[in-house]
Image 1: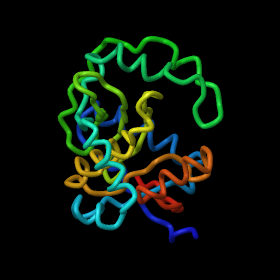
Image 2: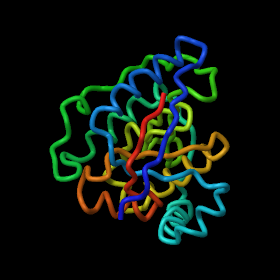
Image 3: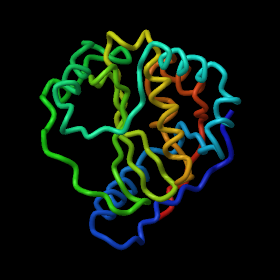
Length: 209
């Protein structure tokens, strides 16, 4: 059942050119075809989210018991791990991996993001010192957009993706707003099941500047 239309403010009127480089392209892209998206309003606390989403909580806890840890990530320090994740499976969501995933990631560090409302944030799950899952998130005002999310094929059975999203929810709570994970009709039934167990719902979105 589709929820009532939700207005998400990207807060474009922000000082700083680096803020514009994050927010302006997002606003242009989302207004073209991203009408009904998978959306989770960020909760008041992690405890509230865990209480409401039993399956996600249990699977995230299982990954933690197996020794995995959620962490922020400096992508340029994990280029070998990122490449290993990207090529660990030939197909995702029933489709061959795009050629771009078979190119080694850039070792260039991210620029400093000094604005708490506009930034690219990088999160991951570690097994020891090795990165085994990652999520790149674009924060623009009320929007916390899941841009890229991928796990190593050898570790997916250990529920690392649930631990990853739980960690992102916890880190983004203070900034508030909405976590958005692509169009709701994208991907397979399995992906929609995964998103719904985490608390994402189909929402008609108005992308406000």
